[in-house]
Length: 338
Image (cartoon, rainbow, N blue to C red; front, top):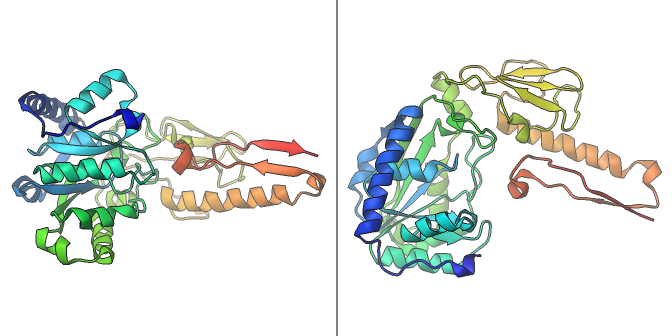
């Protein structure tokens, strides 16, 4: 699809800018009150003169709208080309000059479009993680991003979304009103980006975007106004800590229950897990995710070593959440051949 998507050469005209202003106003009315959004160090972003690069941690699909709605610059967001599948959205995104990119791949056309908008004095926005977070921690950054920033040689400003994951986790279909803080941070100014090496840019970018939403909300508790705080958590968590069964967890309201052994975990009003000393990990999703990957590997290896399967070929395909986009261990596909 992407080869059929072209970004206009000139900067957006009056119609597109007016549309963005109206859209920003509507988004502020919708999100700022519903999600209790607050701004920190926002003068840095408001007073920054284009061209520059805006980078942000990625916690939900609403991130571009929330950030764009709360500042004055027209941002050319770099977005997965999948969002252009709808003919209506394709028309809108082309009009406001969203830059399409193939997810998870280096893309020369995307780089050219970004470079052109920078040369024209525009603002380019991107999410260096390349995907939204499943566990509330900033994900590893795409390796090509620091090289791109070095190539463009313009200032880099970061926006860190704190509390946004708790308000709308990737695995949840519900918006939960808590408290969201958007903090602007200067990564590198124009002179700094010219003299810094790729290694230094990488280190500064990782430091600027690093965030643990579970830890932040634990230290800055604010109640989540929702009675569905655990619903759809099984899209990410697939191993029961008690009986180690796969795909046995079912969410109900604020609780998740194992259908095999009855083990239950409660998500409290602050988004934290109930303290269960039997848990083999600390009480956050990042630790739970690491633990269940180890358990899944053990289950896979034990299955491969089963004596009744000697003389046969087992084709085991494990779809993890980075590629499947749903949960850590989505399915086993077994193909037997003599």
